[in-house]
Image (cartoon, rainbow, N blue to C red):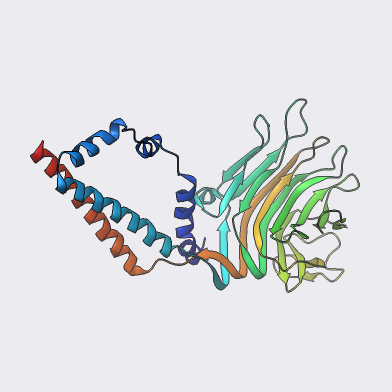
Amino acid sequence: MSDLTVKKFGCVILRWSAHEARPMSPEPMALATGATSPSAQPVASAIGSGNAPVASAIGSGLILFVGVLFFGSLLCQPVFGEGPVKVDIALGTSALKDPLIEVVLPPKGSMDTLSFRPDGILIQQVADQPGVKTGVTGIKLLSNVEGDFSFQLDFDAIKLARPRKGWGQGLVIRILTDDKNAPIMAFGCVATLQSDRMYWINLQRGAGKPPDQIFLPSDFKSGTWTVAREGSEIVLSVLENQIAASGAQDGAVATKKGILREVARRPCTTATLQGIHVWSVRQESGNTEAEFLLRRLRLTADSFFSFKETPKTAYWVWVLTGIVVVSSIAGIVVVVRRTG
C-alpha cells in the first residue's frame, strides 16, 4: 500500500478499535447504584479517610483521561481526502496485515480453501460434496469513494468449468453504493451452462425492477480487469496477458502486455461507493471445481474517505500526557504508602 494510504488510514484503525472494544464492565454499574465493588473499595477508603492528596490525584487523572479522549477524537475527524488518491496492494502474504483488506473465508466445514502465497491469494473451490456447505470466498476492499474512480484487479482464472446446473459460477467484482436504486454493480468472469468463460455484467436497479444484465463471450485466462466510473457511466475494460484466439479484433488494441479491449459501457449511479468485494461465487448446488489467483489490486479515485492526518505537534502532546499520567500514578502510590 502507498505511504499516502497508510497515513490517511492510520486513525481509522484506532477509531474502529475504540468502537468495537467497549465491553460493559459491571463495576461502574455497581458504583452507580450505590454498591461498592471490591476493586473500588481502596479508592473509596482513601477518599473517605481524609486523604485529600489521593483524591485530588485521582480526580486529576480522570479529568486528564477524559481530555485525552476528547482531543484524540478531534484529531481523527472523518473527511473525504482530495484526489486523486491511489491505493496499490500486492495480494501476497503482506496483504494479511493490510488494514484495507478483509478476508472472506469459506463456510465452516467446507473443503474450499483460501491461502496467502508470495505471488497472491489463491482461491480453490471443490465440486459440490453431499452434505457440505458451500459459499463465497474472497476479499473485501474497505473503501468509500466519491466521484470518478478506477479499480484494477490482476488475476488468473486457473480453473473454471461449466456448472452442472444453475445460472453459473466464477469470480465476481461487486461494487457497493449508497444508492438504494442501484446498490450493487457486479462484473464477473463466469462459467454458465452455455460456456466455460463469459463476461457477466449485472447492475441492480432497485426493488421490483429487473437488473441491467448482459453476458458476453470471453476466453479470458490471465490479465487485468479495470472497472472505471466516468461521470455517469461505468466501463469494464480487460487486458489479456496472452493474445486471444480471435486476435486484436472487435475494437481491441494489441499492446506489449497483451490484448486490451473495452468489454462494456453502461449508465450507472454517481453515488458514493461503500466498498468493493472480489468473490468467487457459488450456487446452492450444481457447482464444479474453480481456482483463481488474485495477484494485485489498485484503486484511484477523485475523493477517498479517510480521516484527518494527525498534526506533528500532537505526538508531543501524547508524550507529555503519558508523562503526566505516569507521574500521577507514582504520586498516588507514594501518598498511599506514607498514609498507610
